[in-house]
Length: 181
Image (cartoon, rainbow, N blue to C red; front, side):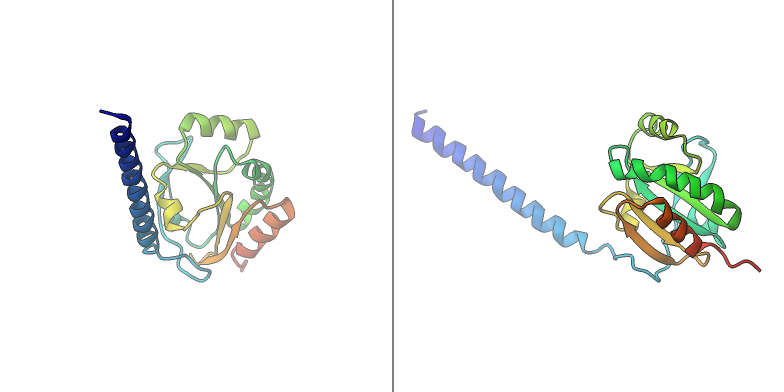
């Protein structure tokens, strides 16, 4: 095989790889739009995730009916996630007695990574791992951190993307706490 034939074969292989990449991109873009975008006012999708520390404990959104839910999606590599977690823990200590639950959902990392991260921050709220990213997909989460505020009726009150400070977290928890009778 001479140089010209090798070059032609090499170019052909590159062309096939590029064509496959284009087809894949078009297909994935077309199918991604089939997931309905979650919006404020929508009923929050129910889910079930296993608690990080107690494998017998399942967190189901439906179990929190009548409470406000501060649903936070995060990853250990995410610096803003790490910064807001202690503030979330501080505010959870105040608002859990007022009917607000926090559930921190890690995006498909290992139990070892997640436990080390949580223990290093000394935070005290329920944590679960979304191993298949199905909950993340149901809530249309692309960027981390992302927080979905769910009111006591189970509807999406607000969708927050990006880091929050402690004042914002307190204000958001206040906005989803159940009415006191």
